[in-house]
Length: 222
Image (cartoon, rainbow, N blue to C red; front, side, top):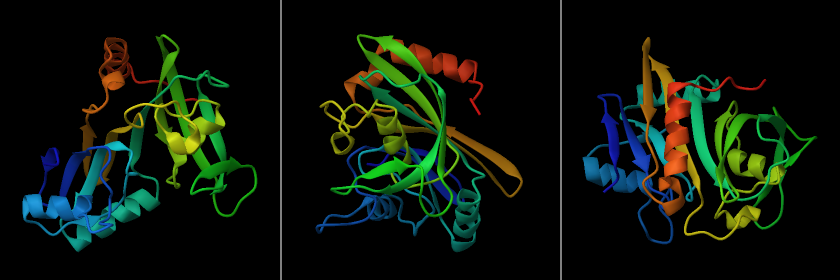
């Protein structure tokens, strides 16, 4: 069963498990099909998460809402926050990363100074958890392919378990969509969900830091 965070007449918000493909492939039903069967509803995707990523995801229940949410995403009026772990020392512990995400080898992407379209832009803060691990709270201001994964790779701190980008071996890729805030019809909606998979995501030091970030939101570096 896909965990449901909120069911609204116009949309559904879930806490996506890691490891589920968004679209059906290899004869296996993808996330959208599984959820439609679970809820007996027709659903309209408006954004997506990588297979390896868990976390907060919204799907519309009608075409009009789908159009409104899609426009909000494309207009960058959705605030998204991600949680990631790495066991590598970053080039800097907080800041703002801008660059073009361009194709690299073997299905990966990389950050480059030159590229087509608007550059990716990610703000982030971090906190040391001990034993060489560091938690990152990231706020993407654009929506590019593999944006968070590429950003942390560019900092020299690939995500724990992210084999595609050189992360240390782990039982999952430690990337989670932590929260989503958006306005629909003049009403603000905010959803927050902790990750349920991965032993490192349950570490007391991390849970304490997440509480602090909730109680005292960071001042995002420009």
